[in-house]
Amino acid sequence: MTTRLTVAQALVRFLAAQYTERDGVRQRLISATWGIFGHGNVAGLGQALIEYGDDMPFHQGRNEQSMVHAAVGYARQSNRLSTHAVTTSIGPGATNLVTGAALATVNHLPVLLLPGDIFATRVADPVLQQLEVPYAGDVSVNDSLRPVSKYFDRVTRPEALIPAALQAMRVLTDPVETGAVTLAMPQDVQAEAYDWPEEFFAERTWVVRRPGADPTELAEAVRVIRSARRPLIVAGGGVHHSRAEEALAEFAETTGIPVSSTQAGKGSLRYDHPQDVGGVGHTGTATADELARTADLIIGVGTRYTDFTTASNTLFQGEGVRFLNLNIAPYDGHKLAGQPLVADASSGLAELTAALRTHRHRVADAYVTEYTEDKERWEQRVDACYEADEPDTRPTQPQVLGALDALADESDVIINAAGSLPGDLHKLWRARSRDQYHLEYGYSCMGYEIPAAIGVKMAAPERNVWALVGDGTYLMMPTEIVTAVQEGIAIKILLVQNHGYASIGGLSESVGGERFGTAYRFTSEDGTFTGAPLPVDLAANVASLGMRVLRAKTVRELREALAEARAADTPTCVYVETETADTVSGPPPAQAWWDVPVAETATRSSAVKARELYERHVSTRRRHL
Image 1 (tube, rainbow, N blue to C red):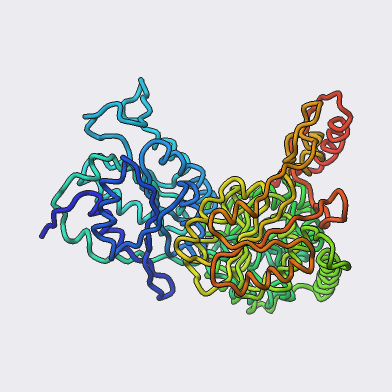
Image 2: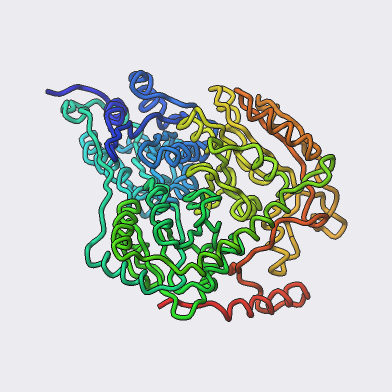
């Protein structure tokens, strides 16, 4: 039997019938669609979403990139088992997807992109917003999505939708390959009718695999761990994607091996778990970084080993240090010339625990005492950063985090991606649950936080969801506040005003850039941005978009405002202006290096001094072979 539908109608019906299943839990794969309509999709997918609105919920976006961020936030909160689709018109609507697609793919988070495309039949050529490429008639702006998509196809015939849609679902549900998936949809094809086989619309369940370890690799991994005196675990985002937190805790408790975490892996253990030693790398804790410097074995679990984690390959300095990489992706399993253990994180950790328990393997008591005492000293430093002796003064950024930390419980979710906040959060935040700490630091995309908070709140409506943003990232993409207001999505925004790009300003100063072009100030007579701060009222801007705003000028007022916002059942923003590190003590400095090349020759003394320091750090870099 067949059913006559347009291509767009068939796609919507197909997507509504797709499910995932893992550990016996089944759920919708594409639970909703975001859209902004133009001539490239309004008559096709727009009409189809009306036709089948009962099967496919729709959310109206304000910015194409931010719609992707919202979908990605939803997907991460849903453990990659459910996500959203995003449809746009052709031209700028489609190219605005590129940044969001890159973020999704870098972070291995599934999202389905459905950009409109030019006429497949070329009957109107060039169409409005078409990029003409003289050497290739089949190229459109959608081709810019190819390098940032894990799967890309252009549906130029109705019958081509069937294999394209099935391949798209395969990639979205593959724990190794998942990321952004793009199906480019020519606007004439979207509206074309076709006789579809009924089987295409039957419910289909995609089982998300949990592969176990190869016996040979497992035996070698056990041998390597048993031979190590100072092992350290680096927990990455794969721990969360696999829901391997309990398996990691059991492994750490059985062996006594301390657990550090990347930005994506923080929260793999609660902050007060005996084996948790905090963030590792450039933004890590002194405890974790010192353990990393002296470790003879690094056990990476679900980590990509980015430059922040390895301190640009200067962190792991132990004599003869080796790497054991438990990862579901063979590509990551072989990094740093490590011993791969290719498996699902939860399955692999369970197998390792069982094998090591048989051998009654555990690290020496002296090693446990060492990292336990170091951790206690670090927690005292966190307390000092959070403490505010004078509650009627303007807070520092760490004191802002301390006020929220004192209020939050394990049900709160905090979201951040860029600026100076990621460094402070990685070092200082006390994660209380496996999904409380939501940092997008694979792409560190300014503007991610607010739309992602909407996606997270959609996936977990019972949770308090906080978007932590500085003024720089807020100005990049505040528009989805309107969506939160429109749909009554009660996200909380903590907006920190520090008058510029604080993170890059500090980095600029450290590499001889003298904070050039990083402050939000008027220009001075010499043309530099060193005048008075700009008279920008971001709180008023938030209010103009329909969100309730609570202004806090002091630590005391901040605590009260945060408590009021947390109790609110409507979208609410807390606005606070902070003291800068120039006037008061800030968070602990970086505990490990990060390689940002400095000018090799310069006349300004700041750059000359920065280059001298750079060369000293470069000399400690290692290639792990």
